[in-house]
Every structure is written in structure tokens, then in C-alpha cells.
Length: 232
Image (tube, rainbow, N blue to C red; front, side):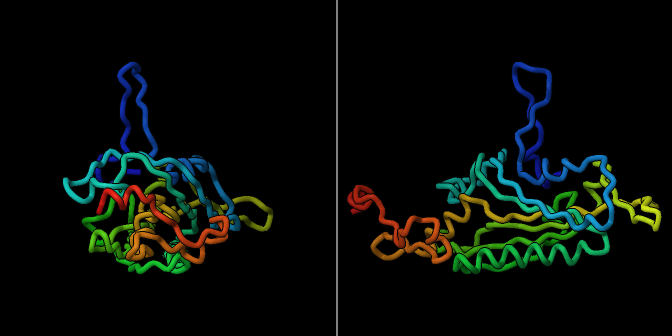
């Protein structure tokens, strides 16, 4: 998968000779499910979603990034994966970004979409977009999601191909699929964005309309009184 930094790489345990790895994103097992498979063209695109605990070695720079829950070693994330015909992967990337935007619009967040420069890409990514939400507490934009087109970087290493069926139902010449991934929900980052965007002067937090059906009718979150007593 070749991330940009060493985060998510394998770590060996002290009491075993076997290399152990804590998964950095659900993208890895979702794509690997199709290892050494030859798909039919009419099966594409394949759209997958997975929820997992994600583990990162990154600790962040000293200061605001290391406080609170913005940057963690372990967090929960919902990841989206698309396995695509190469001729359609650019379009599929745009679909993923539009879907992400629909989520954050529904939550009422102020966000922007940023196309990342080449020096910010991992080895596998051909094109990548970051989605950043405005976080008033940080007084700056903070990344809440990303979407990448990895073209055939992963599929060549995993042996994931597809072929066109002829009239006899047999597969003709095969080629490697393109793989794409996108963040749907990175839980801690979204919690930060929602709390900071919807907090009232008295410390209460208005629940976004889209979340109310899952909040048992609660429309406003009330902080513990003891917290504000200490602040005073």
C-alpha cells in the first residue's frame, strides 16, 4: 500500500519472530479480498465500505495537534473502496468526492476540497483530494477526509485483473483494475468539527439535524456542570 510515511508499517512483537501489523485503514483488507482474482468487466465498478479500528504511529508535532482527539494512535473510521475499470476511474474518484461532500453538507459543516500536490502523495496515489473542515477552536482548517485514485499500483501487486467476455462466455485478454479509496467517517475528527462548529456561548452543543434521528430525540448536548465550575 506504500503510505507516504512509516505510519502503518509492520511492527514486530517482542516475543515472536512473526511480523505483526496493526491495520492503518480498512482499505487494506477490503482491496486484499480480491487478491489474485480475475473479474468480469460487467462486475465493475465494485463499491465497498468497511468500519475498522485504525492504528497510526504518528504522534504529531508538539502543541495543539497532540492535545485532545484530533490526532490519535487508535481511532474508528468508515472507509470506502471502489474497484474500477481503468477507463472510468477518474469519474469514480469524482463520485467518491461528491458522496463525501453530501455527508458533510448534511451535517452542516463548513468545509473545502483541496487537490493535493504531488509531494503530498503516497507512492500508491495518482490523484488525491483532502476535505478540510473549519475548526473554530483551532482557528484553522483541519483534515476530516481524503479520497485517492491509486490506478493500478495496488492491483498489480495483488494480481487483481478483469477481462471482457466474448460471445461464448469466455474471458478474453485481461488487464489490471484501478483501485480507489475514500474516507466516509473518521470519527474523532468529525466529533471535533461538530462540537466546535455547533457549540453555543453557554457551552451547550446543538445536535445537527441529520443526527437527531439517532440521538433519541436529544436536540442539544449539555456539558457537565462541574467542568464549567472549574473553568470559572
